[in-house]
Image (cartoon, rainbow, N blue to C red):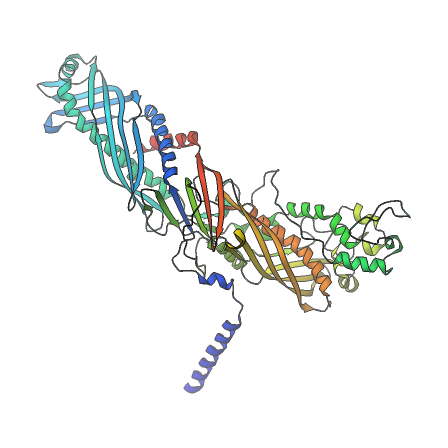
Length: 631
């Protein structure tokens, strides 16, 4: 092959590739492509009101924990070679909480912790040797009372190269107003200590002041950061909180998903025409309106309406109940659902002002936390919340859209409903056992099934494939889009495009494709905040099916009937997906109080007060302090 031929082939290949790429449908909604690379998916602010509340909690925790603190043995050399002092079996004998304690943010990323006028008393076994006036061996019990302690420390809030939070102490100053030392049963050394306690106190004051700051800075720089390093910044959605976001864990018995039904499909209108024209069996011909019960059946003296539309209506609660029982794991499988991670990585250094502390998180949900979402968040802009909350959270619609995109890419939005699917086996048949085509209408309402089968919705299936089972395969053709908009007071809209494949089971091992239907759905979503989660409930307001392929010759009415069924199933699945909610990135010891939710263009604002489980915080603080003392 000549060089010119090779070049021509390469150009042809490039041309065909470009044509194929241009013709390929996009994998996500075009509006999602208008974001800004490097923007954050989540911003949160702890406001001044919240900081004041945390100050109160911190003061209570300090007052609770300090008297219980187990203090390690101390060995300290005195300056100018005056000996060394050992204090063991130390216990706190008295404590007075500080008159003033404050935690205040300061630009650009500084946290100031200060307290004034705290008293503390210690007792322990004394040991060591001193040489103040003459050499003495220290023994007996020592009691030290420090009064008027003031403390001031500055720390910087930072992020690591991996985006994890980090705290670094910058400076510390401790001052002790008065020290009183008493030596009990100390022999000659005890007499000397009690006699020269003022001089000894002056020597001991800077030692204790240094010990206080060293202990505080060590806790910040070592123990606290060790715990922060262990906090994952990429969290599986299935373990983001106690309840699995995708419903993969067992629900509480009283929890159900709110599935809202659409109005009855055009089955009712077709059945009414059939009844009026005398096309129904004799025992059904008396039915003149599928929307009401016209009176007793003259033959059975029973009030029955067994038209397809009426059966669908009468079994509406049954349909809803069955959909509520439908575990999403039966459709998706738990393995892939467990592979979706939410990224809480810090995008920038935390920002501190006098009024708030702000953190900016990635807020991306992706496969195994690898990112690679092909679109980006819009720039988040703080809006007026209408009140001063303790805590404010700003969320881009990038967060749910990244979830939907990677669910689509991992085929979590492709699922099969077949005869084995719980609660749907009776429905997915071309011939109804005791149904409308069998001539025994009373059986339809007394059977344990839905009272109607897919052969009623699509008579061609019953004619061409009698007594067969049906499989429905739902597959999204692009990632669904969830768009936040401030129109009409705030709306969350979902757009879903997909394909429904209808298969007939000819034998246990052979299936035949009967139809391929294009699916276009527009839905409105109601959003609420419950138990530290953002939850949604979807109501489809447009559900359009078009016949893409097949020999069934489906009419528009039959497509609408099938669309009603698909609406119920898909609405149940989407509500199951959204019903457990997206976890709000706050510690589990924090509870949201009176949260309000406002929706703006491409972002959502949650403003709330907080309640902290003080007992649990005390338990965690005690554990952290005791572990820290082991260093």
